[in-house]
Image 1: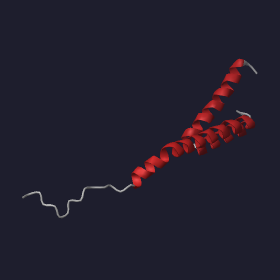
Image 2 (image 1 turned 120 degrees about the horizontal axis):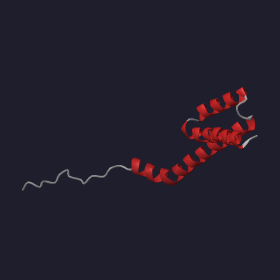
Image 3 (image 1 turned 180 degrees about the vertical axis):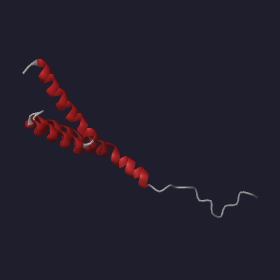
Length: 91
């Protein structure tokens, strides 16, 4: 393989990897299509899609783990307002 063809293959694998962050299903279908057409090796398609999906899911888990509980508590916490029933300030 020449350096140009290696860089094209790596560019395709990289595009599949980053495409999984946008749409996992489209990346898998695109990778399967390229592998079936002989444009990319099947193990490379598998590795790029697997790593992209795995890292994306772990990133979402980490975001939810770190920011999820405070956001959920803030969302579910009732809004407390001062009790103004029975107080007459117009005396």
